Length: 64
Image (tube, rainbow, N blue to C red; front, side, top):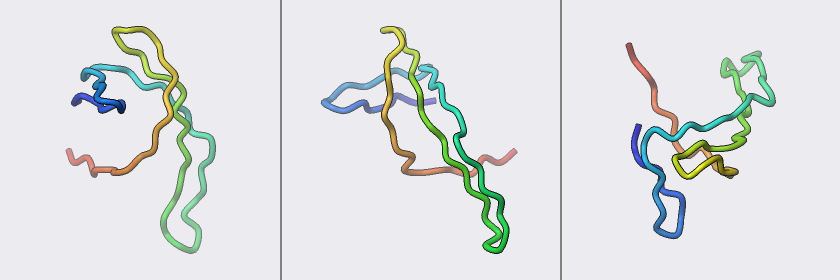
């Protein structure tokens, strides 16, 4: 959706595809908040497929 800062002044253009998978899902149970763990595998760019190490720092609600 928008360019991604990759560090050292490098930006990946919007449109890059990130491949990830869910490694664990925990039901809401007592807390009422379910959790999941996503593992980022690779990013497909116009430069080719690259490994990716990332942390999620913000999650925005998507409304219809």
